[in-house]
Image (cartoon, rainbow, N blue to C red; front, side, top):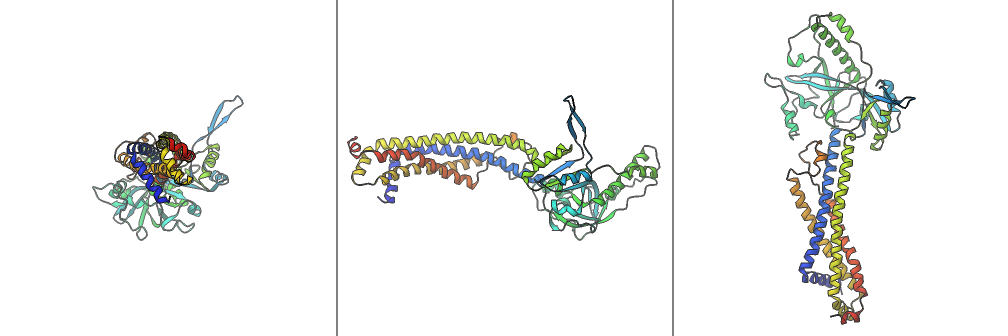
Length: 474
């Protein structure tokens, strides 16, 4: 028999027993749909974790803060805690010597006010960073990064920082572009030509809000003339909505700000002269506010973070807050996948049962085929192909059913994994069930493979039937 004859006989045999074939295929459909939908729920959760991790910034960067404690054990076996060491240049150097660390950079953070022509930016976070190692942590999408010695008043904007500018008026106190951006309209036009516009920067809000209040003896702060030299690529919410300047400039501005704040406090509390207050407020705080540690790769992050914490500092990295949720979601995904696998196993047993029953009913037909000279390989091929056709057909229909179920889940408010995703950002393209092309292909392949395996022993039994005994079977 040629292959076309084998296929024709398989199709006639399956159609001859329509109800049995339908029920067997239905078992495969339910099994395949179950396991595909179960896996798709887990894939959707992982996809949301990945998006959230991307929004958090560079996954290889550890942020170290200037607070914490070191736990020690005394001679009596009691736990003791002592204040954390200072986050100074020595600490930064120690971080840089930890195996797996590429670089460590100190950051100084402050709030500044800006103005460009008729547009104002009423307060934005500015990070001071050493220009020498900025390229280790960031990359520019436009322009360039800060250069040591050349950018005393140079600024690098986060990719969304310019959105905070708005046209100054009596009735406008916020940027509509920011609101529209967070509502999903990401393509917002720029109001300020960052590279060709003069930008005034001040530590005093009076530049933006036109405050007429002054303190006797304290001269108004003269805004500095800054320039934008670059715009960063996206590095997560904090970096995207901030501005970066030379850390030396930021520290000087912080010192000026402390002088003015101390003078204002003393004046309103009835007291000291401006000169005395200013000199008292000029004292520089000890240590940096934050330090960022860049690791060689994701594998090094946990070990480096553990080492930094052992020094007494509080450290965190982007994926840390998601680890426990991911672990729980992975366990739930494994459980749901096991349930789907049981359904598929039941379907495999159904295919094997159908094929065995088919052999019992067609024993005489098998005997006739042997007598007229049919090869054993043709008989084996006949029954294996029937099982494969059941498995493949059930697999394809199961995939279609799972796609329909996935559509219903994504169109409703239901989420089986809501306990894991409640604290994640609600993005417009987030889904509850995610069925990928590779998942569909894998489902079709395994359903066909299960049909092949389930039909192997029945086909082998058909091959071993005696032709004489088969013909005598009525």
